[in-house]
Amino acid sequence: MLRVVDGDTLVLRIGGRSRRVRLIGVDAPETWARHDCFGVEASRALRRLAPVGAEMRVVSDREPYDRFGRRLLHLWTSRGRLVAAELVRSGFARALVISPNTRYAAVLGAAEAAARRAGAGLWGACR
Image (cartoon, rainbow, N blue to C red; front, side, top):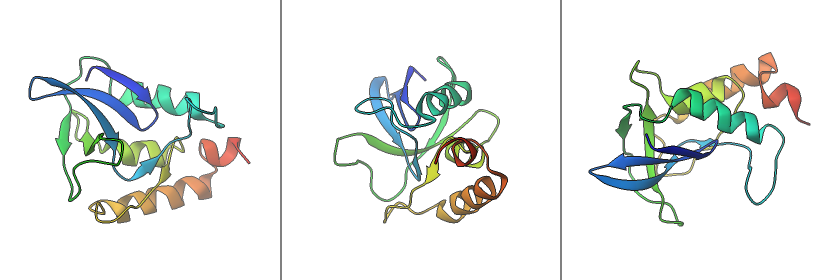
């Protein structure tokens, strides 16, 4: 892992090259063009889950790139935790299903439902 851009985008070294990666299945509050409620916290949460220098496991889905040229990937920590699910479960991001990349949609949907019920993160802090 090289660096976190925001709560759902990071830069990874893949195959010896630096690649901008968008996590599949999540939408974190913005911190660039606008500053959404809980955006800074979401970025910090991703930095904790994917610290600089960490070895991460990546899994692709059906569509490899988004319209901005970012690599679309599912990211797993060295301890086997799905990063997107951790972000959603803790209320740092919302589940976002965009077909055809739906491999973990059910997991992320369940994580969001639990976070909403608990008022976790952005669900308790933001209107």
